[in-house]
Length: 99
Image 1 (cartoon, rainbow, N blue to C red):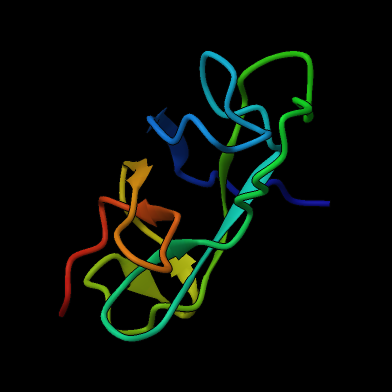
Image 2 (cartoon, helix red, strand yellow; image 1 turned 180 degrees about the horizontal axis):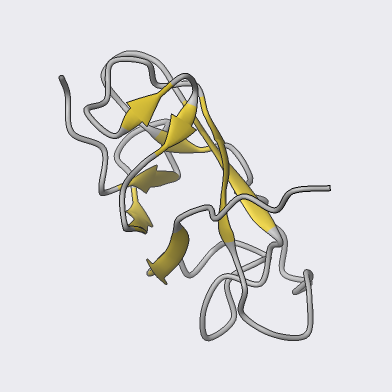
């Protein structure tokens, strides 16, 4: 089985996400969204913290085909930053750059 290097989630500043406690503790995130936003599809707004015991999050998939970092639905950025969104978008990929 071959292992593929995926970009790490280098920063997450979304305080209301269950996976964020001093860094993203999800194994991998999915970048999704519509209406011009690149949402973190892994965002879970619960008070209970979850995920892995260490910070290892990476981008597992990206459905924002209009991003310059998206190649065949995989993220090619060297690292991804996630931060608070606006309106109905609770968490956004701040690395998203429209092609």
